[in-house]
Image (cartoon, rainbow, N blue to C red; front, top):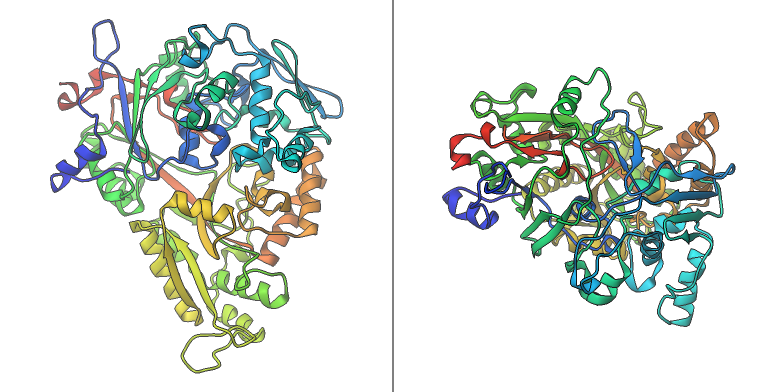
Length: 608
């Protein structure tokens, strides 16, 4: 996330180009409160319809707002109204959901509105949802919305595709309709008992004004205009993104409901309850892909916060799980928790080399999985910042079991070699490398990124495959390029991380749904039995039947191995004492407006 000191200092100035203003109180005449930190991966877009990556989805929900939100401190999580007025009203069969909007919510001022104040209305959510279906947008999230089966939405998309005409935004459909200026009705083809969770995703389903999209055209991702607490004021792509609090943001006050035994949460409520949000004036996010410069920038005091301290520095930062004395002297705090996330190696199931569904095809993928030393990855490469994953189901979600054990967690090279021998993947020419059963070369082309952590993972993976006798070729590109290639099926093997964005575990199996190929299903997996389970999981209420279906889905995931789950990540964040109120979200990304900067707590060099 950042750069270095003199060797370090000169580069830090490049990584944090606008670090001149000190964080201070925002009383009249005082300097602005400026929150500074860095991402380790570049954003891809600021248009919600175009994004599916974590880092872009951390930016957009501070601009755009969904109908509902998650309580910032409540654990277990709790959904509350955001722009909605009251709870969503479902029909008895959970197919029709009606939501009333709060009146008097306004978009940030923008030339697209021609000098008029623009109120948020029901039609804005109708339009925003339709944008995901518009083929011209090529939304990576369309498959998720299609899976919810809004009545008439897929047909509207199909009409545009078949006619090769622009998407008809004027055509009303039953699936999403503005009943009046402030009432939205969603109608689904099938029951969705947990549909309310879909309405709490500001990082994707935030309201976008049609006038803005039409005014800026194909430049709209550089002009994000929403109803949220912040607005974009500067964007140097893949380098620096700057936000300031929106003068048009409505009155919103700090109001959270931590558990009674959450002493820290209760203290935050006592301190902030009734404070108007946001409490900071400006947020500056730099992109620093190399971990050492990012860490040094934080240590040098050029950032208030560092998220996801790299594994190489965790031992220095928090030895034994406690903040190192040299950092604690400066009031630095550490926060360590398991993420609702996993990392996985995945195979292109359409690749003639690693895809397919025959016993030999399956044996190859399972052998690769068994040969991967994920315990070593968690212990050494990630420096204890991970646990070996046992399942596609992500921690904190409804069907997660911390005691579950599957082949995903096994490291067993002899068994892997036995599988390859049995199914004809043997060394026929004596060069030390296995060939395919038909005698053709067996070479895994692995897509990757040029950064230090990836290099260590590559070294470990190559050692594991060398033991197996499987040749590796690495193909390097930046992460956004690799993501684009994966979505279009132009890859063989890649590793990514994924995070849950809702409490329901069904999200873990979107990647196995054949209807979501090109979106969530980057492995391009097709299996009717899994599709059937996924479809059933969506429509039934929680209970024994649903729990059993989740277990069946895990068994199929292990059996066909389109994804080899590697680790569940542990994340370490650190803050300087002037940043008050921080708590890492679980299923959502927005948090800037819930924190404050207290200049009196900053060290002298931070207040001058």
